[in-house]
Image (cartoon, rainbow, N blue to C red):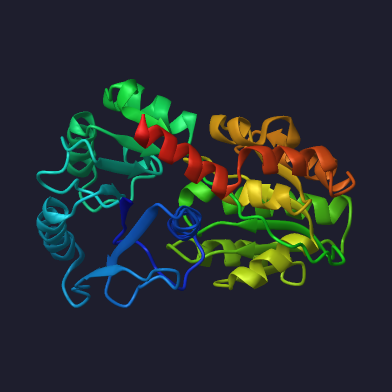
Length: 352
């Protein structure tokens, strides 16, 4: 029996995010194997629905964020020291005593702390600590070749210690719907997600192509939604743009089925899970020409310069003008991004 401890103190059981989806769907795929046992390690109140074996860590919600992080670091350090089996953890700092353990894998979604999009309270100190710890960890699990390259180039990590495990999609019985949404963007409202340039480009589309076109923005506010909402009002787009804060997985899948084109003008990502989800559900994809998007979407997306509003506008026209449900696109996603295959690949890597 292989015991795998999935550790995430960032996990929120009732919120749809890329990191949360990886935690849930990766675990469910592992649990399909008779010789694998999965233990979830999460904060109190965030127990996953799939987990029979759960270890909870106190929340410390009433304490300041830096104090919470220190207490969680101490708690996880002692916990990970005692845990047997494989440990996959995305919390930083890396728990004490864990970095050199051969059964420990540090999950890294991206290295935004080394970019202008660092959200840490003590940015320079945080980045320095991460760099030192990542260099010492025996095993790093990351979600794209792009992020692996960044870990090697920016942080001096030994490439032999970095293993790529893509994010994925779960095979789903589709419920096709009338595609009454022209453009869909799923992203938290923060600087790197570049909502304003999308709204400006969409304004050009409304003025020059289709005055009745619809754009749906889905995502939690991290401080930038107010400015986006003001821009929408200033451009008289209130009737064309809808903003949704939080939705269920079922509602999300319905949005994909209803959308003609998925758009992502993001300036920085470690992967881009909504892109492969949208492709699976037959949406056309228009996205930034950043390296990671080109890695995962290949020739099945239309690319634009995310800093050039008119280039975004032109690409929206191209992508929206294509028919949906391209068979080659859907087959590509199925062949490369099923969670079951991703789980199998990890187990093989671990055994080797």
